[in-house]
Image (tube, rainbow, N blue to C red; front, side):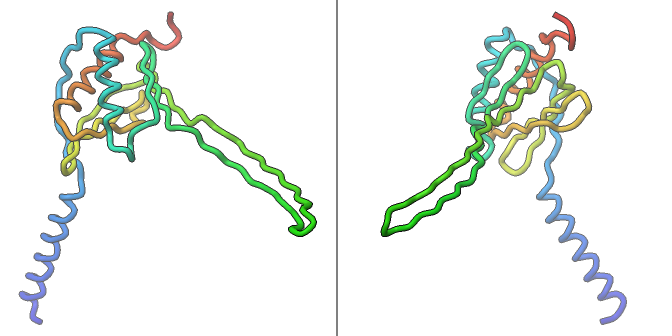
Length: 167
């Protein structure tokens, strides 16, 4: 293999790598939020979009107040058991120690900084960022209009939220 052929092989490899990697990345979609008419409408939109996510991302429940978006991811059970027994004489000792933990998270509207909209394959992804600019939650939908309305609704709740430490 001469230098020209080696160069062509490297070019093809780089082009193929670029094409493969570009299919794996999310594309940012610029969006300017629109006005939502009321807290009630915003809460209904948020609840519907969050609960329509694929099962893999859907929470067990959602609570929306004027202060926060609460996402319940179910109950986590940790435990161990200890048992001993004699089969024929029917003497059995058993001990079970279970610890249940309600796994839920609150995203306070006054602690969110911004939302970002992305598309990846057939999905639209809305990313929530906290006031430290860290991604704290992603919401998935297959419809652009629902992703946009989710952004509108969360922005409405963020604008309505009182500043930290005020009443």
